[in-house]
Length: 302
Length: 189
Image (cartoon, rainbow over all chains, first blue to last red; front, top):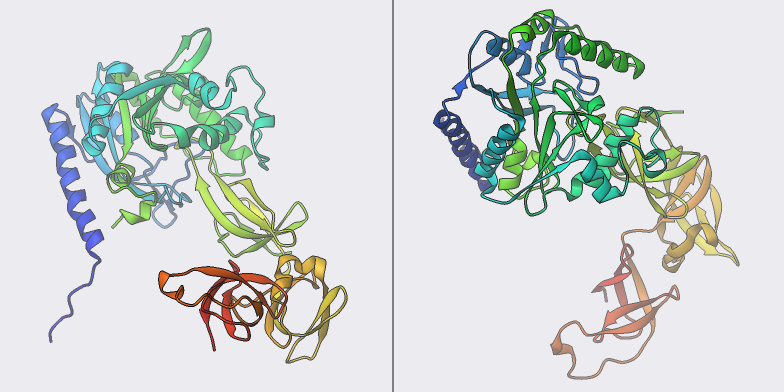
């Protein structure tokens, strides 16, 4: 019996080839820098604890799908693995939209002894693999908010500037809405825009420092054409502080009516021997969106 | 009252927000990587047609508006309203012109219209996408000008509304009009 050939529109076949090409170039980028590829498990018993990232959980096996390979990779870093990267599918429950998918591809890597500034440089070079050479503009979170909204995130009242939004109480949530609606769409129109110095209350797993009298997180994000592409940290190595942040994130989850998540004790212990390092996670599919000039992530997913 | 989560709401849903009925025309999921997810929903007011954008926490539930659309035939128009009848139940309703708004220009007797009920009350009509209407008044086309493409001229239709038609179309002819745009689509007779 003869089989009908599978019909596939030429566009998606073209994406398939380009995707393979970019995966190859990404691996070459890391090989050129002597960064080792690792393959940490996607399933975990303990979860990554984040107030606003919901995990996909299998009840029958009592495991979570990871939302990023971060915890596994940090365990390797603590064991002395050196510079490492992982190209991995990651999973986030409920994230579905023009720029979101519950499953997507992430490139994540860690550099021992790298300053936050060096990490920004390397991440921009990585993004330019996909979008070509272009200028890089660095601005602080505060500068970005003031430039696009006229609001100082550390001092000004925000409530009156944010559209009515039921169930949002915290200042960080309001700032997030403001950033997403009034700032992000304008970032990186003809360049890569790096946002640095996030409010310390949005530090996640980053170290904090005092800049101009304000406590800020050593965290950066990179945007091009309004798309959030990368999130990087000067990595926190303080076990006590990390535990406090996990508990705080879980408290926030409970306040929002979500399940608190089990804390990964093994991960916390490994932070004690985590070398000073910087790390970043980059959304591979969003970079492919830029390469193929589409504003719908579904256009470039297989 | 029935509810739907922001994750389920699609364009075409009818919802009630702050006691007002809306059609959903768009729903965008917005989430900064580490921030809270929310949905930016575009709404068109069912009665006034005013378009607003509202932001909701992702996963929040919205009330579904009690909105139904029934096909009904226009029987006749009165001084300040139009009377429609359901062909199956023979039920008749009168909708005031101020509810019908701009769609008044498409009111042709004996045609089927969608009649929109909100909380059991008829509040607006949904005309057929294409409607065939006779031209009651238009200037004759200038001979020899028809070859130059779509040169348009005003024409008054049997419902009293004015549209632009190609100059080769004459008084007494029937034309097909797109009610979404009010533009001429083709000649029928």
